[in-house]
Image 1 (tube, one colour):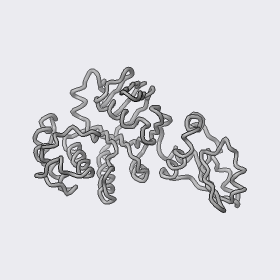
Image 2 (cartoon, rainbow, N blue to C red; image 1 turned 30 degrees about the horizontal axis):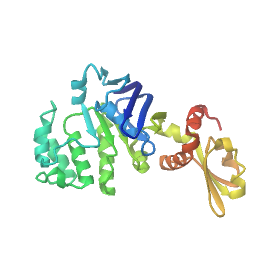
Image 3 (cartoon, one colour; image 1 turned 90 degrees about the horizontal axis):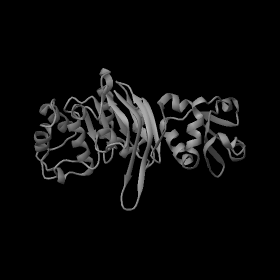
Length: 300
């Protein structure tokens, strides 16, 4: 569904320059990829490149086997996007948004749009500018789901949503890809959400894609180790992603680490994606590139 080849993009303003660096990955049909990383890592910039809002300086993007540069209109017709800043006229009511922007898509379904407005408890008569941040996000989601899109690009769609709405969105995302014909690339700082729905995890830092792999494979390459402070301090430093020391006990995530499972001095288990992200972000600020470079062929 999505193939990205060596994308580069330099973004400049008066105070700063940021670069998307040589990003390549493939997202098959029927799968969800969670795009993770700290704020400022380049997630939103990458999504805007994929949505056609930024033109890459070099590299290629293929969506549904079509070259983006050669088939921009066709590709945008099959993209469902939730991005910031939103392009909707703030003075439009939600009903007017459906009427006006729906004309831009060949398969927009007003009934489907109204169905999702109802699901998200949105008043179609209300003006977009009077909505809360969460309600604005829900409106974008409702529209994105209503024109038969094949690839969905969601940038922090959970932002401003309550727990119930986030669960509803997770359910919708899972249902979307269940037919094996659609795919979703979604960024989120809420690792619990990514853990629920993502099949793949892509991790970005400083504009670079450090790794991209199936979620289960990723987590299986690490272990959380908990034990007495003095014992954990003896763990090989080159294997420790991040260590958090308490008053009496310490927890650490280590590369590999399965060999410690038989050591009764430790509690050892594989991290879930939320735990992985916590430890990796904490430790990754200093040694993430080295970890990402070497952990692909990890042996315990």
